[in-house]
Image (cartoon, rainbow, N blue to C red):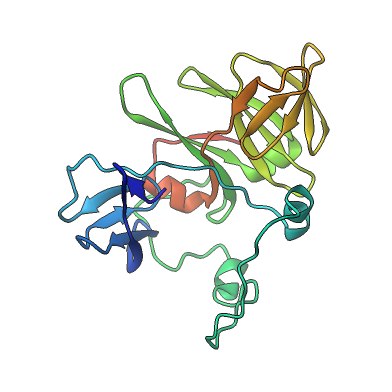
Length: 232
């Protein structure tokens, strides 16, 4: 979110990278912000305590998204500028290989550089952030995966089109996927999969909240968080 302490912060792309991850700048102070953590790292705002609230994202197909959300407003590609917005037009050659455009200080060969991972940051009891990465290939093979990080339980539901959504479990143990829209716990109760949370069919007021998560390239996440736990 771009609101901190009730004030909207307007951002732009600095053109600068840190460990191959983009840095944003805010228009008010030109401070640079780390994109993966949402905190200022260079400039006037460093040490201010400012931190952006992380939100969940999902990477999916247009067909699946439209089936879930037929009322969706779509950003038009008719921008008035002459630019090729086709998929992969800008970085097609880059995505075809595992080579990096810019070097990073550390790599980890448990996965290929550009293998995709679902990534999260958990708050640990000591106040530090605990980074976690889950291999997208692993999640495709385990479409209902339940895990734990620093004492916090989570479940990842992966749809047939490969969309990953992560939720708190609240102590629930989930047993199977009924379809893309429903999962069942070990007691046979059915829960609806939504963008905001898992909602119990028999008690719609019971919701297990969605956790902030998004996809990243393995090399970029590892360069930023070499202490990350990897599930593969």
